[in-house]
Length: 348
Image (cartoon, rainbow, N blue to C red; front, side):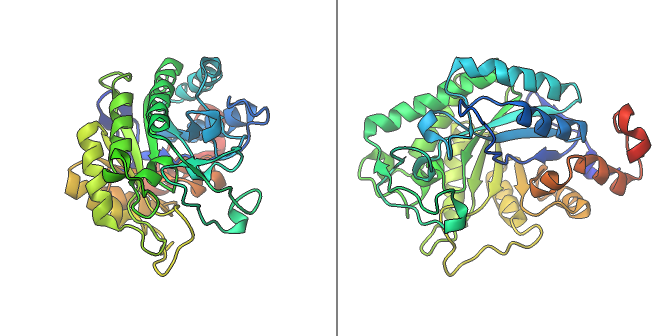
């Protein structure tokens, strides 16, 4: 029996296997209204047909100004809920569970008239990483504005529950607003949100937990390591994560970087290079973790679970390349697979 294809349950979330489709922005909301459309329907449902245990939908903003681009998804309005419901209902027909990653881009909001952040420190980006080759300088949020964004996360979570999502992931990685607040290199505030770098994230976790079902697990994605010169290292991430676990986070989705161009310290970018981060957080916090980062080789994904490095593995680019990655991995690892009847002749 493949460990990758053993079921996994945490609270009321029961997965048929240990495979997660990692959230990946599609920048495909043509109407710029934040609502999923036919592209998202085909994109996500095809991965459910392909055997994925859990799909985490792409970074979805809690406010229009918090999108990376105006073509991103959003959950800032009740009018968006029915568009998600139709998509969720179709995904669940294939015994796949579905979550959503809610977030605010902060100083990395490319299309915002005025990006915001914990501080007015601008973000450095490589020209090819943005639509326009550069980002506008951010405005430091007032204390009241910070508290309003906490409530926007809460309201987005309420809408996610109404839409029928099985779990919610808070995006606290890759240089977006939650990450910005916990980073000493980005947050130079002098109020309580600067003196306590975990406070913003902690408040969001508590507010989200207050409106989701008690048996719904809450996931948080974090960057275990920064690569900018002077960026934080793993001990700081562990310190932050302990606070978030105490506030109510049930699973950590462990990535790294994203806060700016790497300096002297660079990501390895080799297969499984982030797995040691996931294992360290799992062991230090005694919390389930999702490992991610170049795990599209089925044997490597299998080893990550078998070795106890993580409870779940997230596949990103591998699923962009192959919507049926999970079925193909199962065939490779077990020599036995049960595809949808329509595809049996091709995949068996």
